[in-house]
Image 1 (cartoon, rainbow, N blue to C red):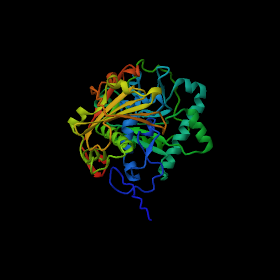
Image 2 (spheres, rainbow, N blue to C red):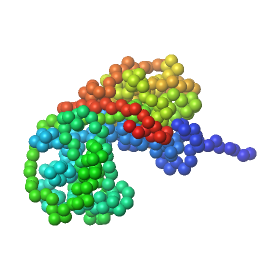
Image 3 (cartoon, helix red, strand yellow):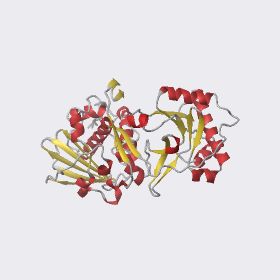
Image 4 (cartoon, rainbow, N blue to C red):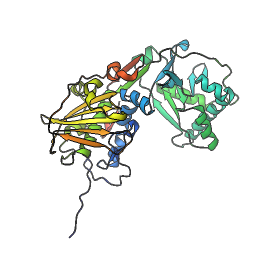
Length: 409
């Protein structure tokens, strides 16, 4: 007797799933997800990297992730008030309630400047600090110019009213770790990708021209010490559409993994999947009814030990997915139409951080929440952050698509 095994079909595109090595993380790895699914093809997995980045390193969720698991925040800046509100690259030190500057070189019109954390500069030594940072920068630039990939990573910062009218953002090159780690990589000859951030294409060309004509005899002659801003602003500037798509993708991933009797695919869940892959726009009504919610509204499902938890609820021919992250510190809600072939009407799922050992309990009793939505008021979305000057910048865009899931904006 021959047994034919049906091929796995991607829940997003409908193609056969082949050669999946690690699988799609049901919850992105960047925020502590450990369990993967083999129901997503590699092409779709790759296409989703940008919306996952938006959720995990730019949205309000990234602030809590940086506190809980030292995850990456894409843009948080200190402000040098004495230099006409110059924005400087850095990361919050949540334990010390302070801000630590990354090693960086700012390309000002009157000459480049090294900006760094004073304690790190004092421990490493001024001359050694300058030597390591400049040598690493020039090496990355020359390797980039010779055509070698990933030596210099370019990040364009979206122009917005706050940056253009309140702060200054000249182009810069920086390293997202300590100068000691950079020196170690330099000694061992390891490839080190530095980051160039800029506002305009003219700024980018200016910085590259400075590097092309760098004076090897030394650029820095003056050393100053300054106190950072007393209350650094932690500012979220994130894309609403992409963030909602990432939250919806997470909800569909959970359904596909924990609802074995329900056909989770583009035929039965076409409305939400078209939004996730970028084939349908995210409307104002969707943004009003879905997204971040007050964590106190879903506190009863929070996972112990700081993990993530979810409630799947089927009501009025729609799935309601409540998510509670990092032990209830931040929550979301997503609702979409689709079938339900399970023998239960609600399920609670607990996902310990970085673990594959998830648990599920089911019930035929409907237990919906009344949730309050909020995209912009960070003090309501993440009240436990205990930071001053939490602000949110919301950004939407008009899509001109060239390929599925890719947008120009």
